Length: 200
Image 1: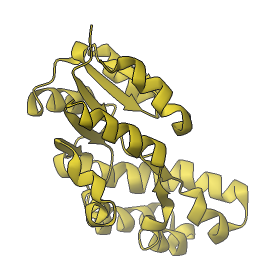
Image 2: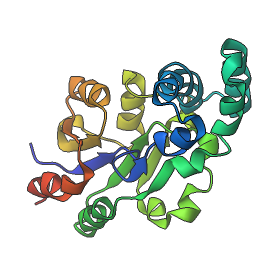
Image 3: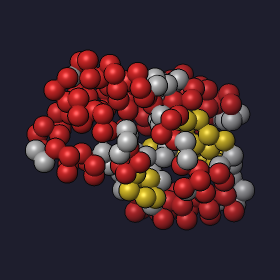
Image 4: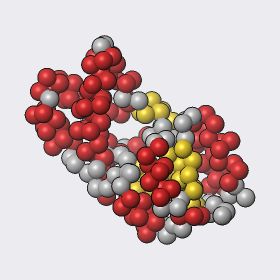
């Protein structure tokens, strides 16, 4: 079925998202850093804040659970914007091509409402989307089917006619379960080649 609308993730689709960029100099020790990412920052900080928990609350709870990482936890969000290493020009270029062809384009991103503040001023192309679901604002998070259902209702999407682009396989599989067309983006440098066949 022909694609009529586009639904984009942000991290590692538009933006070079890498916590390691900040954490590696902070830790030095790769094994300790990996433990922190897998047990602290991903589930207790980003995972919770992306779902709507306030940063102050998530930080406090994480320190209570892992007091040995108190210093790193307290430094995590003050350095959060540095984890975004900039945007992928090829993604922005194909987005603009899609927009020029009059396809509606939307965002469905796991992102804290607090850390998203200021992103649109720093990266003005974000203002060009026809609608956005930033997970922290709606207190829902991918791959929960409820956030896809919210996108369907809010943006008047027909999943079979909507192309969803995301870097995480679990998010892609959740979208496929609701009959979205999908691109599992593992290499942003080839995004133009992957999207262009869907353009009329």
